Length: 489
Ligand code: AMP
Image 1 (cartoon, rainbow, N blue to C red):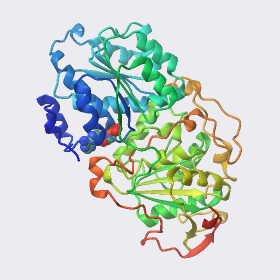
Image 2 (image 1 turned 45 degrees about the horizontal axis):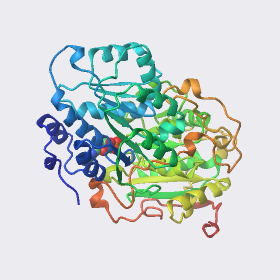
Image 3 (image 1 turned 60 degrees about the vertical axis):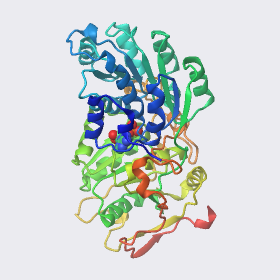
Image 4 (image 1 turned 30 degrees about the horizontal axis):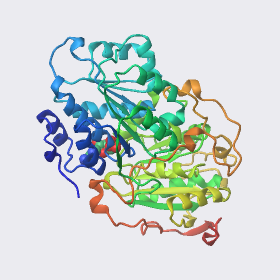
């Protein structure tokens, strides 16, 4: 059962903002968490990005802070009262954007600080005074050390994506930050899973938390149509072109396993006439935000990205996700395809599996508890083969010798998530089939939608079973590759 926001008796400015955003019914996490936070209890929530988690903590915190709302221009009248910590700058920006929207009709101020960017503009915002501070841990410590913000009036702390913060190695930073905060406070912790480390963190910093769990891990959304095609490395781009064309797809995410592979593929696709942007760990913060913006505005057709760079991106309505490389870690598969089929929309997830990916595919099958049928890729006659060296418009085809992506695994992030340029280093090439030792890849996946408890907005799509056959609008003409026997899996 879902309930309406009107039952919450939110302050008028908050209710107005929610109505303006078009929210009608609460999502399951909102239904469960909002009343508990309004009562002032600590929360330990298992919920992932895409479940409506941000509003689940932001709305009740803003509601509780309304008693402090004032129109004074004095910074002293706007001390930090709520601190929201997130592992990456993209997540921090997204959460801050949402908080700003919810608070837009109030006098409560918010800002966001994250690394990889000049501290000065952030400092200027902090000095004006803000009630809600969204931050990544490393940069927040920099500001604390520089005395740009004082946290002695913090009443609320949100540790969002806590498992990922621990994966990245933020525990010491978190401990330091929490030591600066008043003991009397409300603490909310959200995590994809409750691992022993998360439970330890909770027992140290939360008081009698109410546990809320809304999503089953490792489930893929029923609204996503999933296909696995047997395609060898040299034919992958051709397969991508063909499916984009056949499906009439305007935009898609294309996932690859390595930074190098990401940049190369983006360049090749661009040369082949597709507006493409690469999103990987070596891109500056500015470039990443710009890439996202252009994609959101529809100026870019394809966003070629690595798992690290795409983590937590809240882009809705991506019609398709391509796994150009099968991810090294099965959990990343669920995470990747969570970019499509969000919020009730139907989506398409296509994976290109080379013969050497068999074990990785079997891992995914085990994780999502669904039999994966690997379909032969059937190329149209009029599409020139890779070895012909040309595509339809006469430009040269991309010539990649073998499965580059397998050779160049995405560099492992070490240390502070918001400073990938410092922490990334080149790793020894992983063995084929070997699961990556990259801590990011080892982290629990964070699906956006779960099979059992779908967000309210998905109600109409409930029961829709994932399709596994080729769509009717694909008219295969010639079988080229059949690298797998389905029965073998
Ligand atoms: P989140 O999990 O907080 O990242 O939210 C995912 C997306 O769902 C965001 O774009 C929100 O604006 C949207 N959203 C959050 N709550 C609701 C709701 N009750 N109804 C519809 N959309 C929502």
